[in-house]
Each structure stands twice: as C-alpha cells, then as structure tokens.
View 1 (cartoon, rainbow, N blue to C red):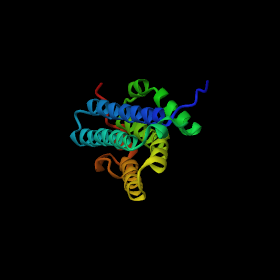
View 2: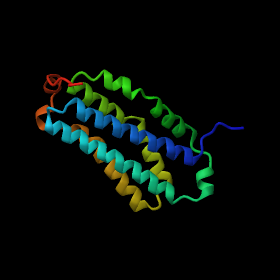
View 3: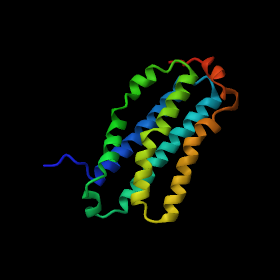
View 4: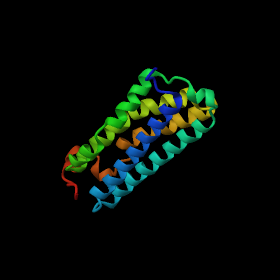
Length: 166
C-alpha cells in the first residue's frame, strides 16, 4: 500500500497551512497590541490567509472524485507536510521584537506555503483567467511584507526598538 498523498489530501494540508498562518498573524496582533498600525497590518495578513483557505476550498470543490483521489505530486506533498511541521508555537515564543516578527512573516510568506498554494492554483484552478488573478493576488500578498509594512517601521533598527508585549 502506497503512502503517497492524494490531491484531496494535498488540498487538506495546504488549507491547514493557511489556517496556521492565519493563527500566527492573529497572535502577532496580540504581541504588538500597543501599535495600532502594526496590529492593522497583521490583521490584514490574517484575513488574507482566510481568503487563501477559501480559494483552495473553492478550487477543490470544482474537482471530481477521480481528480481528488489521484496521487498528488510527491515533492509538493512533501513541502506541504513540512509546512505543518513548522513549529509556529516555538517561533512565536522566540519573537521578542517587531523585527523578529517581520523576519518570521518573510520566512512564512516566501517559503513553501506559497510554493504549495501556487502549485494547486496552476494545476487545478478552472481557467487561465482565474489562475492569473489568484497568482497576481498571491504575489501582491507576499510583496506587502516589505511594501505595505507601516512606514515608520521600514528599517530594521526601528523594528528592533519595538518589543513584543507577550
């Protein structure tokens, strides 16, 4: 019997990873509660993760039982499994400054999460226009870590001066 993940299981793993990222951003809101613009930034990221999970659910909902039961791409499934092994709780405990949080978000957003998400979009979104729109929104989401972060915290030095409250 094979241990290879199915397409349905790959969607499950990716959706769980998006929900984990959402939880991480919600926890970062609490860690930086005294900074309203930072809280707003993390809240927007958390909400975007909710949207990503919904997109994946919608795409999965368009697939037939045979497609869902098909073997998943092994490399992508392995990446998705690694995402769920990422120790978010420990990573959050190590966030002592806003710079730590910023670096953690960069790592999460530019890492395997988006590799898995993009793979699912490319191979399973129903049409090229939907694929293009979702991929564009995903690129914008990743870029917002650097382009959309509150202006007064653009430099590492300014982020290092803000301590986490939890």
